[in-house]
Image 1: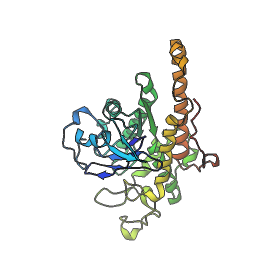
Image 2 (image 1 turned 120 degrees about the horizontal axis):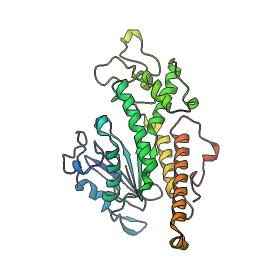
Image 3 (image 1 turned 90 degrees about the vertical axis):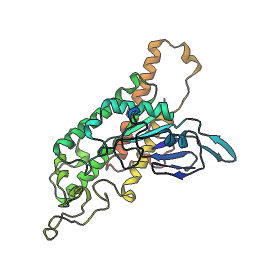
Image 4 (image 1 turned 30 degrees about the vertical axis):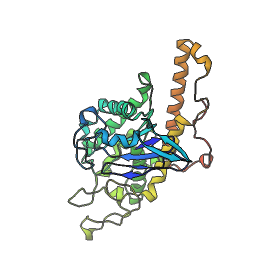
Length: 330
């Protein structure tokens, strides 16, 4: 998903993406479907939305970075600058062994060099019906920890910012909560302090409906356990997940949007967004200390956003109708 934080008034669709503008309050956003992470090796490969390989080309890039539009009687050009890129790591289209630290880093660097992104957000990989067994689930958990580690250390040799939207935690919280009401003997998600408890208990999600093609997880999609009369093939559905892959937007999407807005606030809703004139005279150690403090504040804001919105935690009253995100003071 791409975000350009100026203005736009044009929309189009194609086999690989969508551009919509203006957004509420101005701006442009779009979706670009690639079945793999951005990589130089995939440039020029077949760029079809439902084919493995992650092929892409500049014919898909140009509508975003060269877009011209009119807003409030002003002619504006995007001018090679998409401020924010959000990656959903496409496990299923990508094999788990293909999702490496090097691929995550390359995708983030290309988002900056090709699209001009200064902020890159990665979604952690959730449980879906692409997770076939316990070993694969364990590998997914390892990959998610690796993605978090890339973000944690990104500032050491990059000027851009990486943030994490913990989509895996969100889906876990929802599935665990639903699993409890179905009768599974598992921990209440809000009582889990160590994320590896989710890793260890997650085996229950592999209990699936008795269907031949991509059987979905029972605690993921069922409101009641399947009956013996159906041979375990059917159950009364919940309104959380449409299948073993896609969530119900009417129920689940609001927290996704809120988390994204919160994370963007970690970077853009801040005081003193430009350096003071005295910054050029600061000693190197002072500058490094200031930069480190900035990173620590962003990471703390990121944690707060994920804890509040990528979970089943009730929304704090103080966060409702707030004019600024939780992070706005550096």
